Image 1 (tube, rainbow, N blue to C red):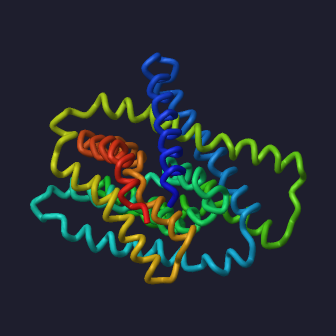
Image 2: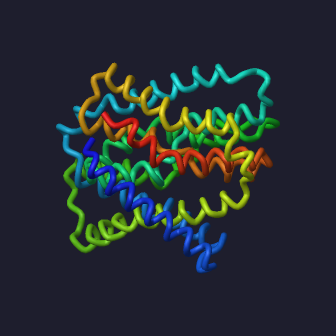
Length: 307
């Protein structure tokens, strides 16, 4: 992993984070604007980015060589779940579930993919999305389980429906099929898709910066320097990517494919943790602290997982 390219990518992310924070500080954005941008990202910009990467970057040769990325992602999820069993029984159930979710799900879409794109281009995005198939399935079916300790009736069933209907997964399948069948896309349509795809990374970073400022305002110093918060953050940022590296090596995944997978799992705790926590009235202070601390530490830990 080229250190200069990583440094340039991190500086770009920091500047966009800072811009998001500045816009929120100047009250040019607010909670409603953040929600609009989040919806725009998840339903338009990210799907376009994924569609373009699958349609333009994928070939049968690449597909045949990256088939192990999906089982590698599943293997990493299984190992992390086993590691989560080591959380002391003395930790209250609600906090233990939040800890497990933060260990399992990275902010790969908002932070990991822009970093992968900066370093490896559309091909890297294609590999990253292949690796994230297992994560997206788990994220869709596990939110209620991990944050609502009182009811789990339709969690898995509803989660699978959400996964199938998710615009990110639909765009991935569409790009895959059109590429595989060699179906041409009209130049103006492809131009529109490419233009929207190019907006994804900066908009995602601005949104993360804006929401991080809100998160920081709700977190106390005692929560920021909590041993539990640091433990969760360091597992998310160091243990998880090295588990990913080991899984990739075990299954013969190498090169850019391996690097993309590791970077995705080296991303901080996913922002949706705070959304689920708020929805199910969980421990917002602990969750926000994990999101904020892991995001800040990630700029250092990205360097520690270089290989």
